[in-house]
Image (cartoon, rainbow, N blue to C red; front, side, top):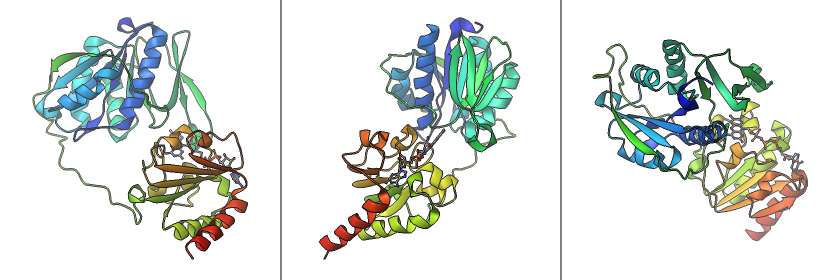
Length: 328
Ligand SMILES: Cc1cc2nc3c(=O)[nH]c(=O)nc-3n(C[C@H](O)[C@H](O)[C@H](O)COP(=O)(O)OP(=O)(O)OC[C@H]3O[C@@H](n4cnc5c(N)ncnc54)[C@H](O)[C@@H]3O)c2cc1C
């Protein structure tokens, strides 16, 4: 195995003091791989005024490399590339994990090229086979799961799609190593200008008290009307699992889950949703969760406070009638 002691480096992405969820997913996966390699996971934090970020990730890694510098105040792929290129050359980790985010997509290819190491992008899985790194990618719009192995090299870089792994709380006590930034000022040819907030859609599901969430069990777009009625009767809003967005039946701002929104309503009804962990991540903290699914073994029942095992097309009309009766 190449790379210094087989260490796993993970980039901690943060913006305005907020750590991107993917960073915890990478650190969780990094710990898992490090355990298999009998090695360590190292968190890379670049920035200015990032004491709280470092404090938060200390428990997630064996070591935190903290690169401080005013030129790193805002995430800038160009500045990150210059700095990381220095650090990775010096430390020579076996594997570097970066989120497949806007920043990661921009950063990883030139960084891997500058280090002359192989890169696999947009991966949804990593496996070690006899210390050989295998990644899982989903080409053709997710229709295939392709196992990709690297040409032999001393080190590798991987970008991972958000929501590919659950994130678990670490219980390490990472040693923090201060590193002054080798970059004095942001590169002239690429500077941070300003933050522009994304426009909020017509409905902001994160603010709703009652959410009726629909999944692939609804079968056809026309059947959404049934659930819209139920949502209206409860004064709630319609949300969905990812396949409903992929089909184009509801807009992306209605998607709940790791690559969608995180919601915490008073009532969350999951109807015809199996309960994949990517979905659960976005709704598990709702006050009351009611699931309707015809499969008694659907994982959604593991997080539901109330469950109805039956055909949604039978249950929903009865439920709606009852609600209207109670409302008089
Ligand atoms: C990187 C990545 C990110 C992802 N991000 C997200 C995300 O943000 N949000 C998300 O939701 N998913 C996400 N996914 C997809 C996720 O893995 C699941 O594929 C998805 O959540 C499944 O959606 P579903 O439960 O609607 O469909 P299915 O898993 O197909 O489940 C349909 C359910 O409906 C039930 N059903 C069928 N007919 C009926 C009926 N007549 N009455 C009652 N029940 C019925 C079935 O028993 C089944 O449990 C992501 C995947 C990846 C790889």
